[in-house]
Length: 184
Ligand code: FNR
Image 1: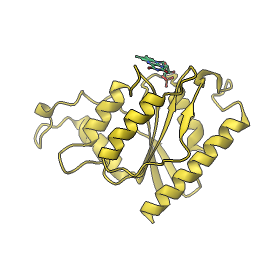
Image 2: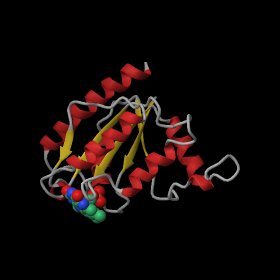
Image 3: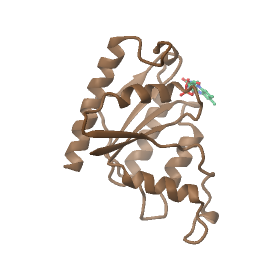
Image 4: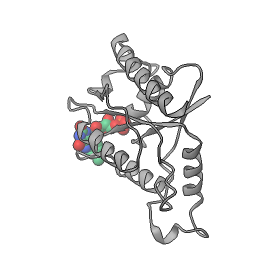
C-alpha cells in the first residue's frame, strides 16, 4: 500500500478544502491508502518547548504520522494572500528537530481553492516556496486552482459536476506518477 496523507489548510468543520479532499481521496488507485492528518491540535511552534525531554505529545504524534506517509496532498484556502497560519505552523512543527524534518523527500501536491474567482493562487505559491525548501518533490503540472468552491458540491458533499471530477482525476493521476517515481 502507498500511503498518502491529506492535509487541509482550513480547520473549519464545513471546510470546502476538506470536502474537496474527501472527493479527491476517492480518485486514487486501489493500492493507495489516504489518511487525513489533523493539524488543528498542534500548539504554536516554540523552540523553547521543543526539545528531547519536553516536546509536546502533539508534535511527536504529528511527526510520526508524517513519517509513515509516502506522499502528502495539501488542500488549502488562501488567507490574506498567503497560507493559513495553522498550515504554516504544521509545516514548521514537521520540519524540526533540525536535520530530522518529517517532510524531507516526500512527494507533494497542492490544491488551492477559494469561494471567489482567484482560486488561492497566492496561497498555492507561498506553500510551494516552503515545500521547495523542505526538499519535497512537488507536482508541477497540472496545477490545481479551484474557484467558486462553495458551488461545487451537492447535498451529500459530492462534486456536482463530472468535469470537476475529471479535472481532479487527471491531477491525481499525475500525482500518482510522481509518487511512483520516488517510491518504487
Ligand atoms: C479569507 N478568504 C480569502 N479568500 C481569498 O481568495 N483570498 C484571501 O486572501 C482570503 N483571505 C481570507 C482570510 C481569512 C482570515 C479568512 C477566514 C478567509 C476567504 C476564503 O477563501 C474562504 O473563507 C474559503 O472558503 C475558506 O476555505 P475553507 O474553510 O472552506 O476550506
